[in-house]
Image (cartoon, rainbow, N blue to C red; front, side):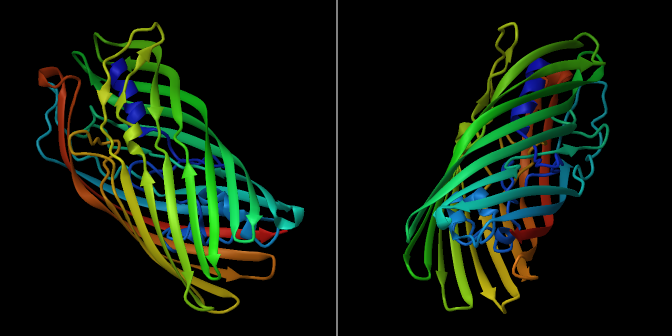
Length: 422
């Protein structure tokens, strides 16, 4: 049971939260990464996130972009995620004497995910300081009681808060540099069915604080052309907490332990070009170092190691294109498309992360209310590709479960951003 509970910790990683500590129901990028950290950037499918964000949310994607902002300002964004997932049983078995169960229903609920940023200039705008509060990774779901994949997962309740003090410096009129520290808190509660004569439940509760960093560069080689690069370091969490099993019969227990969770590093390269004084086109490529997440090696607090569980996440790429049109001094419109690979593979994919390749279709607008206040709107539809799940839990056989399923899903996003210049 200890091995099972800690394995689920690593599969889920951490769930979205921000200053309001509101959890996200589903990660809205491949794996369990959440891209929704800027409403204006979402409108163009994040194709200009390293080159073209003109509000304080640039702190997250490219801190060097602060040097392009028009004075001290703050940004508050709220993204309403509307996920839908479906599992279809393709031959699951459960322990002798237990019912296989139904398909579990849609495990996700609509949930708002907020983020907040503030940026302030010094030295006539050459030096900037900023602070961002975001939730870069997340996953949460709850299946119907007694569904067929319950020995893999039943419920995931996880929160993270990422606080990033940040600086940027305009080294040359054509070159800006930025960077910051990421202080990341993670809290988890994970559940799954367990069996040792009778069917019960295994639960894990744990938390951790770890630190990483981010870097950014913004270059303007000629008027109207911008090249942006950003890097977010990998962050490793050691989730410590209580693990228990109840109602299983012979294997009920309550103990403590930990498991390392290695999150990916992320680098992004983007290019933006002004076509004329109205139109701007943008393109971007992002690499996720998901191969950091290869296996989970739980260790009990008494020093006893548990056999590692292979995850075999693969490095992935995301590609985005988009355009921005300044219709009038009051209105700016955006649209974009992104293809985002899944790091999961058929052999190791689970019901906690029933992921697939994702196709993003987005649109958005910014309305300038007055010289101090602007409002961003964005919407997205994400098609999550169909994939397969085939995993063995509780050792398989007459006392375990072979979980076999087809997955399918989609996500709708409605976002609102508020920007105020002080």
